[in-house]
Amino acid sequence: MSHDILSVLQEKSPTFSKGQRRIAKYITEAYDKAAFMTANKLGKTVGVSESTVVRFAVDLGFDGYPSMQKAMQEMVLNRLTSVQRIGVANDRLGDRDVISTVIHSDIEKLRQTEETLDRQAFSEAVNTVLKAKRVYILGVRSVAPLANFLGYYLNYMFNNVHVVSGVSVGEMFEKIVGITSEDVVIAFSFPRYSASTTKGARYCRSMGATVIGITDTVMSPLGQCSDHVLVAKSDMVSLVDSLVAPLSIVNALIVSIASKREEELSRTFANLERIWDEYEVYEKQSDGNAV
Image (tube, rainbow, N blue to C red):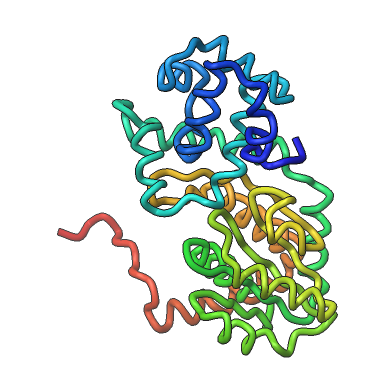
């Protein structure tokens, strides 16, 4: 649906039955919890049957309850405060095993990402990086580790890689002010979307740079100001943003870029191995005979 579900509820409220008004009231007042409830649980919470909840979704114009639930989740994920996240996560977990729940959720996000990722956009992103004069990587707050991880490996392949993470908006612009049309920007943003990342990406694009956005949907703030969007499914577990699928996309980018720079990379690591060995950078493996 094209409208915010809360607006639809308000618009259609005069036509609701008594049971539907109870559903609408709960969604309006506790959308952060309702968005992650099954139809059965939502019905029990407000005192109506599961079938009433399903019919309510259809009456609002959705194909069924899953479509309405998806609309609610897309609306609320960017609005949840840290306190609300804790409450939602506790409701979702219930008495289930935390380890199994989290790992199964991550596996599902990986599966969805693998099935839906635009291969052409991925290929174009790789080629853009290979041709760029400079590579800027933007990632702040919870996605800063993704930016730093990508930057760590790209620094082995290119001479002009700039990681912009953990900085204020002012510092970000100081670092990207000289960007040109010959450069590429790889930016990360997931709910709750960082305003500074969006502003930085928008500025870089206005200067002619190519922006590669790694985000959860093409309609996210970052997605709408990117030239190439790599969609990686994300999820929220308590205070933690699950970034397993985005990290997998980062791994794929590194592997793909490295495969196209195999000769140069081999020379680089041959030199590094000599230096690492000479200066004892890494612990040496024992021969198994040491006591």
